[in-house]
Length: 103
Length: 220
Image 1 (tube, rainbow over the protein chains, first blue to last red):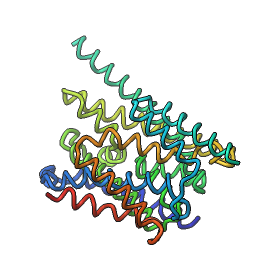
Image 2: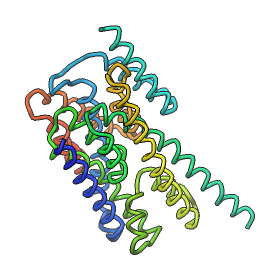
Image 3: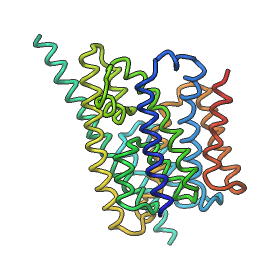
Image 4: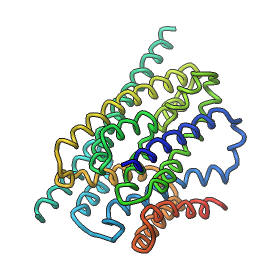
C-alpha cells in the first residue's frame, strides 16, 4: 500500500496548498465568469462520473449487481429530501439485503 | 446589546450543530476507506490532512476500483480546487496573517464558508467560519477513526451495504447542485461518458477525462 500512502500525502499537501493560495491571492483574479462556471462544473462532472464507476463497474467492467438496489433507494431518498443519515442507512440496507439474498 | 449577544450565541450553536451532523458522516468515510483496502492510519491521515469529504471519498474510490495513485491524486486535487475559491472569498472577510491564515486555510470547506457567508454582520461571519470549521474538523476526524475501526471489525463490507455508501454520498452532494439545465446535462454527460469508456481505458481515466466536459460546457 505504498502507492496509497503516496496518494494520501500528495493529495493532502496539494489540497492544502490550493486552499492557502486561495487565501493569499486578490479576489479579482477569480472574478472572470468563465473561471467561475468551469470551477462550478468540475466537481459536478467528477462526482457524476464517480457515481457511475462506483455503482456500475467491477475492475473496470460494466456490471449490474446488488449495488443497483442501494443506488435506486439512495437516489430516491435524496430526491424525497430524507435526512442524510436515513438516506445512507436505507441505501445500505437495500444493497446488503440484495447481496445476501443472491448468495 | 442583549440582542446582539443572542445572535452570537445562536450562530455558535448552529455552527456546532453543523459540525456534529456533517462530522458524523466521517463514520461513512472511515468505513468506506477500510472497505476499499486502505488502513485505519491512512483513513485518519486523509481526514486530518486532506479534510475535504468529496476529495477523500474520490481518492479512495479511484484507488479501490484499480486506479493509479496519480489518477487518485489528480481526481482528489481537482475536487479540492473549489476550496481554493472559497479561500479567496473567505480571505476578504477574515483578513488573517501568519499562522491564523494557515489554520483558516485548512478549515476552509463547503460548510465553514457556507455558514460564514450566510451571516449578515462581519463579526458573526468570523464566528460562524471558525466555529463551523473547527467543529467539523473535530467531529469528522473522531468519526473517521470510529468508522475505520468499525469496518475493520465487520469483515465482508458488501454484506453490510458499505459498497453503496460512497456513490450515494455523491448523489446526495450532487443533487441539490444541479440547479440549471446545463449543470444537469453536464452531470448526465459525465456519468454516461465514464461508463462508456471504462472497459477500454485504464481505471481512473474515465473520471479524470470528464474535466474536459466541464471546460467545454463552462467555456461559453
